[in-house]
Image (cartoon, rainbow, N blue to C red; front, top):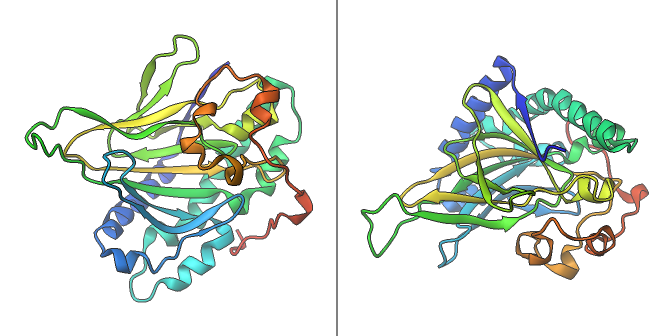
Length: 285
């Protein structure tokens, strides 16, 4: 069973992706105080707004911006004279993504024998979250003229959602831990309108271990920046990873494996009351 599903984009969708990526790069040059006007709000299934993470360590020094239809209007209202295409074009991006996401959900249903996944991802559409990511400039202070040394930008982890659609990256860097050989293998987005889908924790839970969340990390050379664009697809009728009990999933070493039995894997999740999940979006798309 495949752990990475390649996808091909239409020419129109590829052009949209290029436009929002250019806009995101431009936004990254704004002052931090200007960017932080887009306050980062987090809830059970989606986050939205600007966030920056900078520490004294080399790992995970980044800024990101999350946008979804549920909080789209709030983010648009923050804009004054500076309209940003990477925000404004989100409804169009979601329209292009919908058939891709539906097709993949159907594939999972056929492969695993589960039912109702297509309907669940459609009900979750207000929570589909576009993530613009910028890994900040990393410099080797001991030898700033040594750009070839590779560093880990994001340590090994699994994504907490149903699955992640990888849309764009300015350079290679994503590596997956192969389930068979247990070695790191690079994954590259081809510039010829190609992306890929990676299974997350909720798919593993939903399929009772018949599909496994992909263990992955991000690496890069020193003295380089890295921009990328993904879409997280949560499943609002499926339990979510219990962050309040176990902390950030990126720091949960117990899940960085393909060997957990289903009972143990399931213990990392909290229950959900479907009737209390808001499926209304801010945008009538």
